[in-house]
Length: 463
Image (cartoon, rainbow, N blue to C red; front, side, top):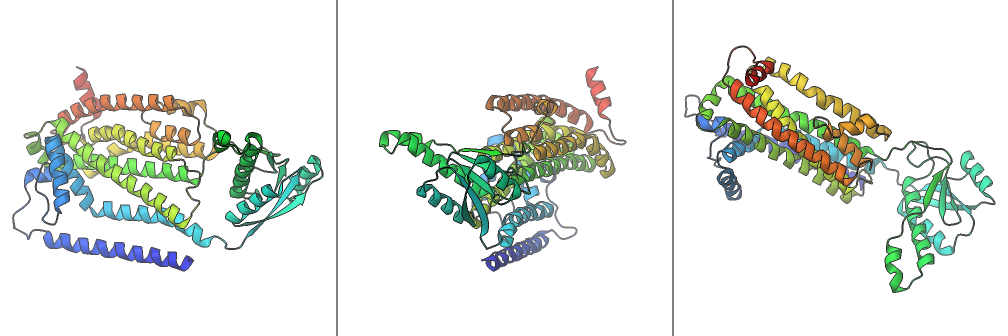
């Protein structure tokens, strides 16, 4: 089975490389010869309606619907989508991210030991034969081999846990006793086995309390795992590697897509194409189409990565995404959209003040400080599992909310109405930033020469 997965990864990598090679050859063969007819200026600026000759009928209908539904904004958005999808950096980056996530899911399953892990289970008090069979079944499902050891007293059970003679103890079939939390790296107990045993014994306890009559079946279905108590207190961390990976992808995507907008605005300004475009469409339409097109590509790429991770994890039986609640995944996607919606206008306004590559880097550096600060702070809090009051306040501040609120959702430290309030604050701030960015863009995009400073534009607007 391991060899099969390795071959599958190699074949997938080879297929991707072959597809990229063929696409590169088709693009080169389609390029016009020197001195030949060039593409229309409006298409280069973002408002062309002609698709490539190789586009399928379904995609042509999609572009037509987008352009008819949104007018000039749709024209610009469709051009941005085409340009990003055809870009080599985007395609290679998407393939690398998908392969990276796939490797993180598949490789641990290949290196996982095939033998059974021995687990010594102490038993204090009565434990029915049915309960013992359930514990053995749970051990088999988690690739463990359970061995029961009777305990004479609670003090003796605690002593055996501290000495390592037992991995965990079942107390009166109503509680599981551990020496260290299962989340600790040096805990001898298998986390999956402890969780399954707690769940099974909770169901048995519900049967004993409710009986087996049909009228009480609902009570049995709603049973909860029995309590798990540790002699040594551990950290309050409730997160796992999945939430950390989510923050990394969120940081990467926000910085990548917003940088696309900044560089795109700067290139249009430096090439003077924007003069022709602004004679046809309004500044807010041109800027809105660029933001909408790149945002659609961003959401599609994020959905692809999450979908591949979930499907591959379920196919190979990986526990990489174990414990990743659908609510936490949806929160990551939602704050990717909200974070992009806020920062895209900021970067668009900044890009309109520069017209050379060195100026664009100077503008992007201060704009990236809030994102970098929120990312590092969120990673720290997600690892410790203990958000401070300052961190919770930052979850309502639009520049830092995408990272902070995502962590609070993963730690179950926020209610639904708090999530909604933070989202509405971000939306309101995004609307205000869009108006400000459009005004800065209109005033700065036609100014050439030295880099235009935002304080000059804001000062002129204030007067």
